Amino acid sequence: MKGTIVPMWATCAAALLACHPRDAPPATAAAPTPFADSVAAAVALLRNDVTLGAWLEAHPEDSLKLFDRPVRQPNAYGPGPFEFADWCARAKHDRRLAYFYPPTFTAGAELPPSAPADHQRVRREGCKLGLLLMTTAESDSARGDTAAVDLQRALQQRFGAAPVGAGGLSRYWSGTLAWQAGGLGFAVAFSRDSGVEYEAEEEGGPEELVRYGDDQRGLVAVTYRLHPGIADREFAHLDEDDEWPQQDAVAVVRLGAAAAGVADTQAIIRLALRLKRFADDKQRHAERKIPNDSLFAVLEAWIAAARALPGPARGAALFAADALLDYGHNRLDAFSFGREADSSARVRLMALGARFTWSHYDIVDYIYTRSWRQEARGLEPGGVVADSLFSAEVEHPGVCASPDTVIQEVTRYLTSPRPVAMQTRAHLALGRAYADKLLGRAPGDAAARAAEHYRAALRLGRGTPLEAVAWREAWRVSAGLLPVRLRFYCSSGD
Image 1: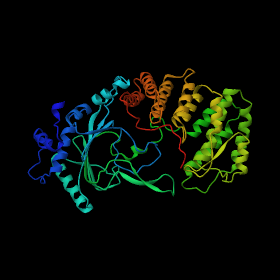
Image 2: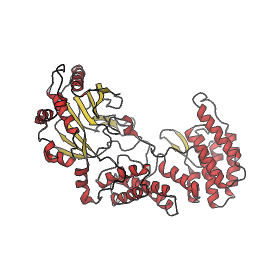
Image 3: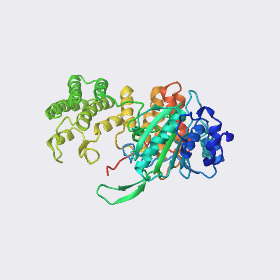
Image 4: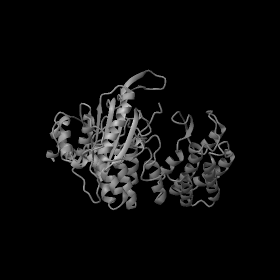
């Protein structure tokens, strides 16, 4: 592998191009420039499986940085630089950045050792070159935009082109041109991205200069292997788990009502269906509210019946009530509870056991705290209700779920026999919670525990879609890398 790389970036272009006569420009090509030749050399490197170890051996002058994300909370929208996706290491020299990516998953693949002593070897052998970003000095935007067009023409004459949208590229770039050719992606632009931005810790407070990335000012060129997440704006702002969609509130009400064994379930199901119709029509009938009395009549009768049930059945009934109230109040604003602290509507619900708190996060209002769901969890309903509670509490936890809380809840969930599919999801959740602890000040043995549970999820999930998910996340832990996504956290709302 070492022989495929030459030591100095500035002198490698001619040799690499000579090795690839099929890439030579045709007679009608635009006159080549040194920068275009450097980008062409990058293409030659990307077409070889260059490992991180081989690169560092050939480029000892490079500085190395392991994966890090300036914006770690999934709902905290950052300044919008170019998205490099799930890279594992970056080598930098002057105005050239080389990004390396984890190996591609193959069915049945085993994991490398995860002991700390193995981390560096795993990275150097497993991470492969996937993206090169180069800039050349240019301060004038008009000249920069023109140079981007000229560079695009020169590169497309060498390598071909299939235009793609440039929407996922940096908002600091102008004249952005993006295309694909020969299994690679290309982007050229004039960049004003200095890698810093003035930010205030709180709204209206003093602003300070905060660095979120590298200085990329000038004519910028990116070449990369096609890889999920690269140049994808949404990748930076993932929130809900992709594997399991949010549970339908009507289905949860039906599930809880059936498991509770309450004689009359029609009223609560009818109200849930009415809420669904309200949700479907909300864009056209935003002024329509469902009368509070409709909700009170149903919930007062339902909670009264629930309180007479034995523990697990009562838990199922409360789970149904929770889904109904949360769906209609927090998500749909289908009811009018008012914002005053002594709202009669809210007081009436609190008498039934519902709890509310004042929130200035996203919605400035009193919000339902999911108190019935928390009570239901403590009553330990079994079967599909327990599985549904697990999904709601762990896989869709809302705005506040610390790793330690998730670890405690999932560990308790696993103390009872569960279907293999649910065991797999539970161990995956534990692996993610321990991986999130790696971002804390005192992670302790979090890496070892994350690896343990990821391996359990991988073993149980072989032959299912979760095999690939568990393997990719476990590989990062085995390589001593931070998780790509922070899943369990609390936001203060500041």
